[in-house]
Amino acid sequence: MGLLDNLLNAFLKATDPRPRYTESRCLLYKNSVGGCDRCYQACPKGAVRLEGWRVELDEVLCTGCGLCTGVCPGLALEYPLGAIQEALIRGKGQLRCSKAEGKGEEVLCLGRLTPGLLAEAGSRFGRVILARGDCARCPIGGPAVPEHLEGMAEEVRRYFPVAVEVVEGELPGEKVGRRELFQALLGSAKRTAADLVPELPLPQGPEEEKGLPAELRLRRLAASRAEAVAWPGIRVEEGCTLCPVCTNVCPTGAVYRVREGEEYVLRLRVEACTGCGACVESCPPQVIRLEAAPKEALGGERELFRGKPPWYDL
Image 1 (cartoon, rainbow, N blue to C red):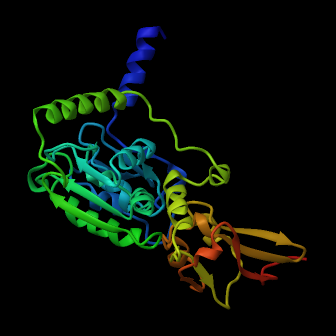
Image 2 (image 1 turned 180 degrees about the horizontal axis):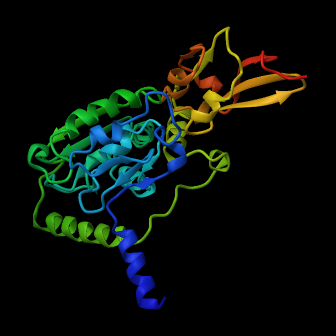
Image 3 (image 1 turned 45 degrees about the vertical axis):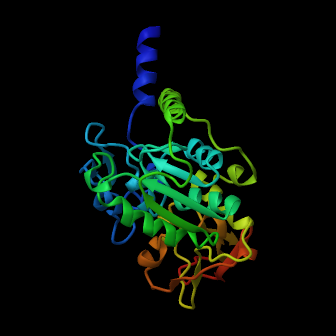
């Protein structure tokens, strides 16, 4: 393959509007009881297909709105979040969509915002202000975006008490003059050019070494600045048979099982739990319950259950 072909392939990959799909974090692929079709239901353009126990994204129909990424319980669908985080920091917690008039930092569609991004920005600036265009007529995200943002604003309070304000039109501030308009157009051109280059990952840290997705690292960072959090978690009641089902369906590896002598121990990496509920739905004896974890539990592990399973063969 020649240099021209390599450049063409790199360009096509960089300009692909579809989010990255991590099969191993998809509840459909994990065979979770009840499956999952949230991305299919959220997509406004019919770009999501559920085929062969995995998600297929149509490159032609996908507009890159990001609505599917926000509703994916296993974080199997994701865009690189570093550039959006930087835009929120530069804008001091203010961001507009590409269809909203005025100046300020922008993102293609506000549907790309995640609870982690909003929580991290809110933990820095106290609140987040988002400006949207006319979503009802927008060819990118469409009329579902405002309701989607309400759901994100509700979820984000698990990690930090952020006040998220959504306005239609310009971001609060001075009116845009000719110079500011030129600067905004220049900035938009620069961002478009930057989108053609693969985005850099978020700075690595201890959480990265543990294999946490970028979204969970952002949530963890915001939670570290909060006085109290209600991080998703689970508890296991009596009746657990210590079978491997919950560990098999967990999309992020938060639940795992180890053997200690003749006993098996079920444990939870708290900060890796997304609260997806796959283990709850799939547990054969139905003894797993969702339960919020306090800030003190982050960074550690919980012992969920311990014992000698009835099927243990001496």
